[in-house]
Image (cartoon, rainbow, N blue to C red; front, top):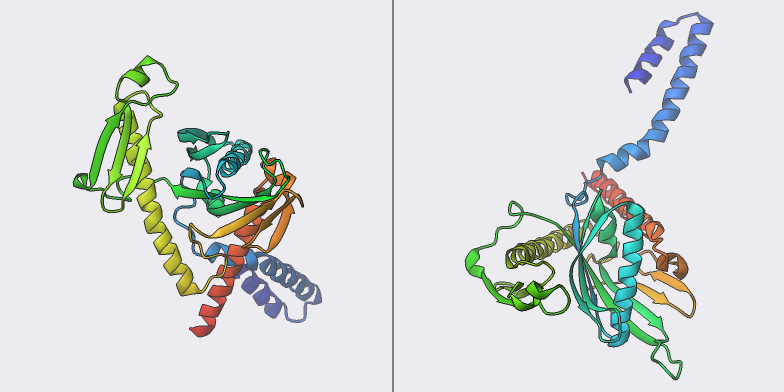
Length: 307
């Protein structure tokens, strides 16, 4: 803007000097073109930022309806996310697992650390539905199963305050693999948050203290996520945003094996299933970010008209 004002002033002061006027005119055109190019970028910079975008996350994948096939599908989602996270250079730690009887997982929780993890993975939260013929199906019938993905930004005591009297904790033996200490000593922790009914079992670490710390960390993330969801829903309602309800129970995607198609219901678009299974979910995430920005820009423009 200052450069444009300077070029305009130079044009006005040039008087009868044709060369100077032409030079000033060309400079004005160049600056105006550059301003037009920068305007969309400036608008994006002015959009309200999600305060959680640069946080690490706790990722929980839980099998839904569909029995053994749902467990296997939850395992498939885990494989996809691990592939994607590797391409992003993120550090992934398994926090808790509950294996399925015929493969896959009834539930699995990961801790994911790295650059802007929540800003990308938050678009994976919701109900994922698969339509395919299970390996155990002898008649070739297509079954529909689901898995729920929860993406919880990591937080600390500053974000969430937990009263000690609201916590009920018991210990138990971990069982399973992990050596004699894990199996003979009560290292596992079962933690109940009485006000919300949230229950967390932590068996991963080799000491009770570490499992307790991990369980508290998971509890804080869940409580923070609940408060965050409430804030997001209120914000969406206020702005009238349509990019999904933002609710954790929203069905966001269907994977159709017969048609090799991955359908994202929020975008109203299909993507190749093979890309998704290969961990190439960047296109879907980028499309969601673009749609979210578009809706926020539309909302801002409507607000500026009102005011």
